[in-house]
Length: 158
Image (cartoon, rainbow, N blue to C red):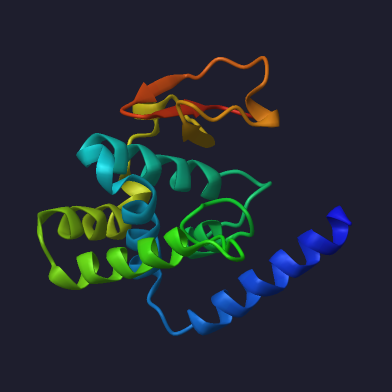
């Protein structure tokens, strides 16, 4: 059953990725940053961007920012949750915010443009994060390397 669920989820994400094929890489990255951390201010947005960059540098993840962002089940912003309305509302909010070109949107776009120049020590080379109150199987027995706002950051693997 789990494999079937993962197959369905992968198909949904593939369909989303196909629909987004025309989106610019920087827009995908900026939307990911905004979707994941716009409520955490500049510090939280920078931290999420660092996680994206860190993943780009690891062999176990894709080597482009866009591919990292659209990788199945990695960022809630892109994960489709059947019968859940908040994720569609979140995507609409982020797209409007990005088009508004306000300070927050410009900051996220800047992070996307200059993602290769970010200082990964800011999050101690974290590869993953989750909200403070989330307890995933991958957080069990691990201490976060950094806490920023309502998110805790972890360095998993090498």
